[in-house]
Image 1 (tube, helix red, strand yellow):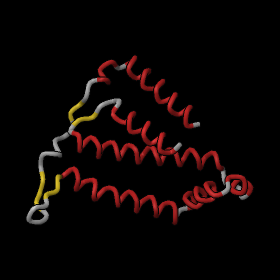
Image 2: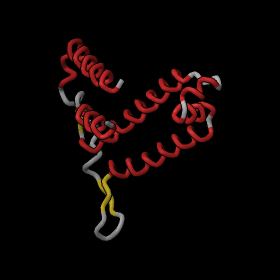
Image 3: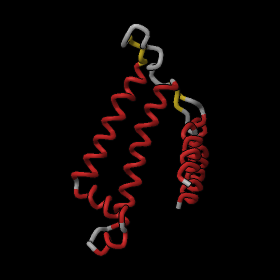
Image 4: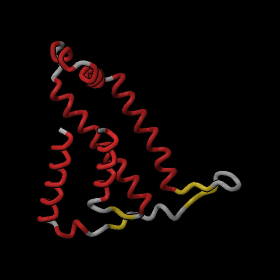
Length: 139
């Protein structure tokens, strides 16, 4: 499935580039990186970094609460631990797997916004190398 996902990603990129040739051009992002504020005598924090420092714990808290407290989160835990038993208990494991990938995509979108704020521009292919590194780490 992972190799298929990478192949599908490349196919989708090529399709989008075929229909929207301007997608290859980098787009400027709102200027966030130039402004910073002083925390201590010699310690400055840029706005983009402050945004990430606030956003990351909020995302982790939201995901933790979702997994621990919601019915879908518990089903996700059960599916991760033993898919066959989860299926026997009436959990639609295919739906849970799709939901897990959707949650991952949502967090990837949040991360790409934070990454774009830090770099000052967004590019259609900017996440591909990061994705390959993540794939390498996972395998």
